[in-house]
Length: 249
Image (cartoon, rainbow, N blue to C red; front, top):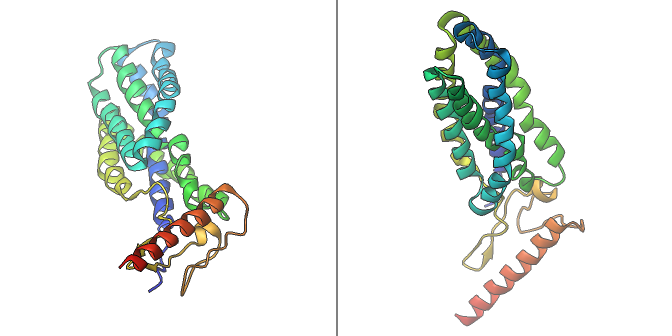
């Protein structure tokens, strides 16, 4: 029976929510900055340096994150990013010295944000789409804009009524409660072909090659791009292997 649900839609949804919360949790430092200055009386340059230090950590961590994505896939990388960002936000209320802010908001939140942000998502989301790749990525990345107009006003409200420490604790818990479970649904790429008992399975390939296979495996791979050549070769070899297996029985 044909599979009528394309799993790439789940990947888009998870990416949308992850970007909405993860990216804006980092940029919320602009809202935390004034109350931290008021409380500790530190110089503005010293305090703002924690946010800048996060960019340096992101630059150093980015190649390592890419290597991890190649080796272990997006689920582990995203969960690592959630853990780092949540740890930084949950520990930041314990700040008493400037270097505490550099470790929590700077290193931990900055390092985790590279996993949950544009760089991390761009390493696996394009694997699910070819013809509609631009549309898919545009929808997924729109989560940043939606999150900025929903999450940031809520954070500002918490800062005004409960203080910046409560806001950090709440954002850390939201990361753990929301993002940790849903990112377990991620897959690096769609399965190319599943052969059971010598029969080809059918599936919804619209996101990958532009046409759904129904009643048999009929892929629109007329393009000459590398992904489609790979699909054709994979199908040929797996089909040939299945036929040899059936003849040997």
